[in-house]
Length: 118
Image 1 (tube, helix red, strand yellow):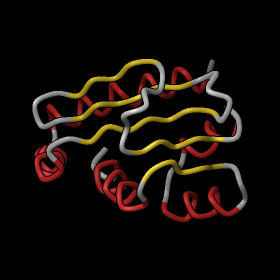
Image 2 (spheres, rainbow, N blue to C red):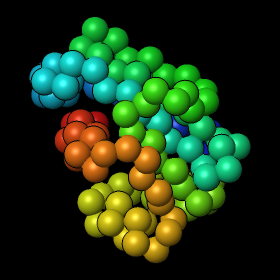
Image 3 (tube, rainbow, N blue to C red):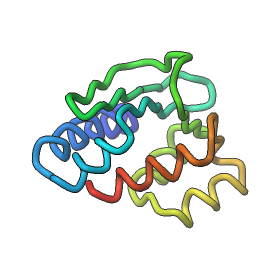
């Protein structure tokens, strides 16, 4: 339940950043469109985000057309990671098997560049 709430709140924070922070809007303008999602490995908890300069949409589930997916081993490791995301945490999560990246690693860099404005 905690992870579901965190992912929902992330959508709220993304929408708020788009409306209030010029640096976030500028970074999003450069990307034009960025669709990504977060889920547990067994897909019991999943949420995706569709971001354009005009709007940010967030919904439950993990469609197949996403540019990037962050898949966590379980809800506990996802919650622990999402509390303090950093490049070091990403790297450690990938190496120790708690996080699996589905998509291009450049998309992960793009996501990190957007999230630093939250």
